[in-house]
Length: 113
Image (cartoon, rainbow, N blue to C red; front, side, top):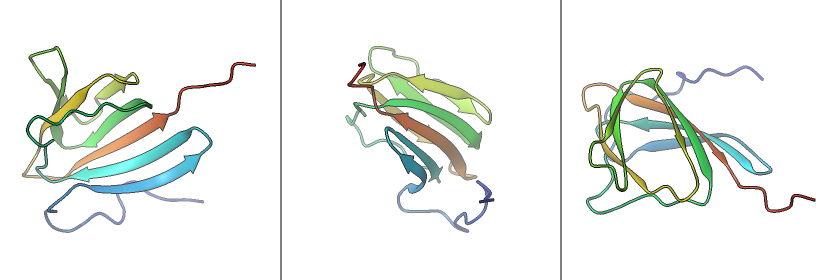
């Protein structure tokens, strides 16, 4: 089925990020996330069991990893590969334009037989 990652976007700023699950299958979830100036709450760190591969499609953002003082500043086309349990947080997203992320979450394999 044909779809477009840039269709159905909100027309104004959002009080919270908008997350749309585009595909969910055994061990894999693909999300489109739209940010309009949001950041992680002070002191909050993501610490997820899934492997996350994320590409910034539009806008700008900064992601900080626990133990690394300087955040990574992202622009359109930049990619982050985040292993499971790599604590990270969103320091900021662009408040002047939508920041659109494509995130792929992969559950670790538990059965290698």
